[in-house]
Image (tube, rainbow, N blue to C red; front, side):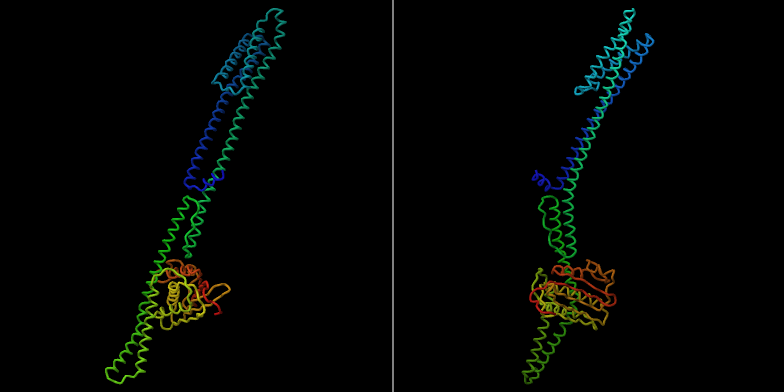
Length: 489
């Protein structure tokens, strides 16, 4: 039995609802049929009760005319008594007929009617004999018939009252039975309704709870798929569709990240051109000096030649590092965590953004070399670039952007802070800065800090912000430690 209920409970929700609807319709149909049957019985019994009331009235009329006759010996009273006797017998015939209302199961009622018919016939016979008394001998006989007639009349009244009481008891019994059946049916249907409501509600609200919890996780940047329920109902299909949506959202977020990265590249390109211009000028100058010495046929100074070639090599290496950093930042790769020295990632990000720093704004770094974290260097570099570019836009020179870090082996975290001395963020906006498409700039997508939030979440860390209007803003990143993190900052 338990296994059958379990299999039923694990079926499809629409099948359970359909079964519940069919069961409800059948139950209400059966209940309606039973109630209708009892109502018909009550109707028949009430119709019978009306006829029985007529019979009771006829018996009372018989007794009334009987008393008048015994007092006044009037022929009219005698005739009325016999007429009402005939009416009472006819009423008994109506009651005993198949349409009369007395069923074969009502044995007591049929016995009462049979006795009432016999007693009424005896009463009629006694009354007729009493009416035929004429001689003195007959008067003696009449004195004996008089009490007998009275007793028979009293017996008739008692019998008809008993029959009326029986019919009323039958009506009351039918009503009580109907009431009990209705109470039982209501209780049964209520129990079934509660069971189906609990069963369907548990499945539906359980799935909705999972989806709500997962939606909150997605808002926080966690795109892990939902575990599929063991049931084979619609909730499994909903979870599968939700997982497909999560995959699509993650893919779209990666697209947004790449587009944001390309937008950052567009911002950095002009600055990179200026950064490359200096080493290229130095290379050009060194080459020109060497060419002039060769063209003048002057003796070659080995020391000067070596110095010029070293300058050329250093400037080429510098240019290569700038281009390499730009290419690494632009390259689209799978998310992968590797132990990386934090100061190296910070330094590369500072190098890339340095061309965007206006005159009068300084970038200060205080990153201990021993802190090594499991990072996706490319994506974490995107975090640093977004935070520093936002800080540059918030500062009206002069100003300072500082990046500092410390490790806390006790909590197993590294704490990185990016602080600026810019305009700050008003309290009413502070709670929304990580929302997608929210921006305080006249131009911009509003995706920068949303992307930052998602990347930090993907690294297993958290990010928070503190700001005072007119004083500046501090972003605090908590990241799990990894690699060699021994030592204090």
